[in-house]
Image (cartoon, rainbow, N blue to C red; front, side):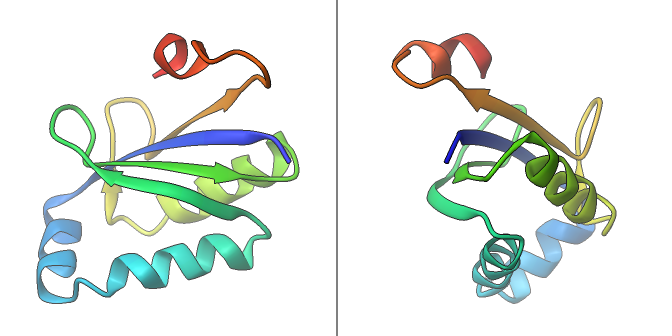
Length: 100
């Protein structure tokens, strides 16, 4: 399956929810799995986004549907969209740095 990078930013409400219930992150990852995607890795980061999640998904349509669903909840925020998705091309190790 193709690999995608999800860059997410929490809203103030999302930060409060995660602070009160750290297991919420695992619940969201389960929901990602329910979409037929696989969470490969997840990192809490400092900077413009709060989390970078590496996932595998069947195709662009699946990951777009996932992004819209997760972003519609109002717990995620971003400058242009709730979740930014980037597809990594196989065999290009520089794809991560070129797209993130």
